[in-house]
Length: 126
Image (cartoon, rainbow, N blue to C red; front, side, top):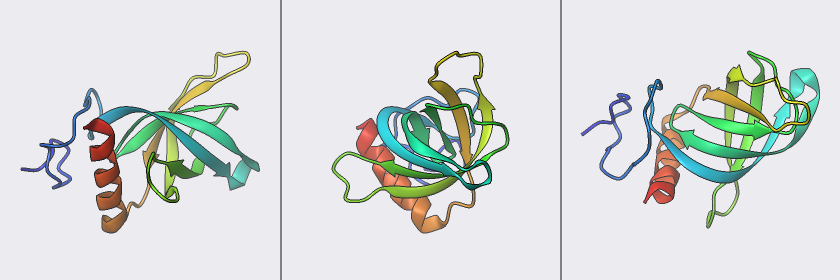
């Protein structure tokens, strides 16, 4: 049975929230290394939810819409991070010292990467 998002992956093991999104999201606390070549920014942040379509990350710096961000997300018990590219679709900038909650939509996710991400999300939600 496909997910409500049409990904074709089974929904039985993935528990999360759909809300306004096209993909389910799973609450998490994952380490993220990020870089934005166009702005010369890089550093460490925390993912607070993640799904097949994107993630919410609390960045230590303001990120502008529609910045392209390279992400390396570390999952517990997994050797090496998963590398993804995302585009900023929303951000909160009314903070004085951060963190800056930011929503990213994953870009050009290959089928093998989508399957790996699905398997990692299943581990987080179960």
